[in-house]
Length: 195
Image 1 (tube, rainbow, N blue to C red):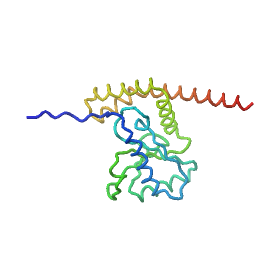
Image 2 (image 1 turned 135 degrees about the vertical axis):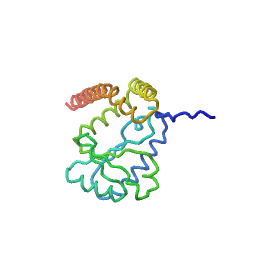
Image 3 (image 1 turned 45 degrees about the vertical axis):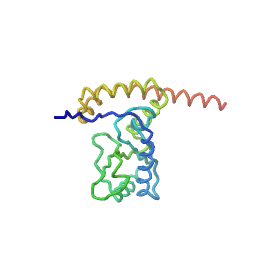
């Protein structure tokens, strides 16, 4: 009898994830014509050379509170349903409804969030992404932590998510603070250059 091994949660980085994001973005935009918003690729798949779970994380960002309902109805029209904030304030979750069929939106695994511009969750996504993109040491350390947790979780998605919440949040908090500090220094230097 052949011994079956569990599929690996974390896979090697591929530039296909950038293409996947671009394709998903185009599909999402088809339902949001005429609305004001911005779409960002966030999460591990948005960081070049970072091994990750092959799931594209996307944030749709809006400025004015009245825009949320328009975005929500646009997403519903293209086959999403609203799944609340799942316990994270100002980060609304949308999932595929399984009823309508879209060649791209139903074939590329993704998480879709809708956030106001001042969302703490959005800030966390953008700052951690930016820091990991600029700092190889942080990317490599984060990657190593992810592999270790996947192994501890025996490649179980739910257990991995729980362990990640416990073990990785402190690391993310630290790099976010470093990114805020470096952004502050850059802004200060830019201001000084203007005088």
